[in-house]
Amino acid sequence: MSRLTEIIEKFQHIDREFMLELLLDYANKLPAVPDRLSQADDREAHRMHECMTPVYLWLEDVNGRRRMYAEVPPESATVRGFISLMIAAFDDQPLVEFEKAPEDLLAETGLLPMIGMNRRQGLQAIYRKVLGRG
Image (cartoon, rainbow, N blue to C red; front, top):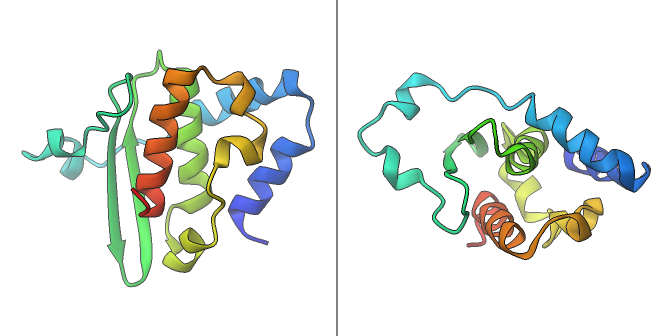
């Protein structure tokens, strides 16, 4: 079973009241971005302008695997949690895992109704970028 499948099933098997709590747990686990990326001259090129929150996303494909790094302000817990969830699911995974991923991770996890329209559009744009579909 893939890490993504495990995460989706975890969300699908908990009450809605605990979904945001689980998402906040992910927010607290967002790994730090290596200095070589966060302090690079091309930092602004990694800004996700589709998201109202200042999100910076770095994707590196090496030997058929994708490494993921993201910087999200601590006060943006929902965005931070969703991105941390994606990193937990996809970081250092074979590229084939990205091809098998569902189109809408927010819907698959059951988080879609809990996310406002503007935030939803930004998160979905980030997800498509992670998957290489946008």
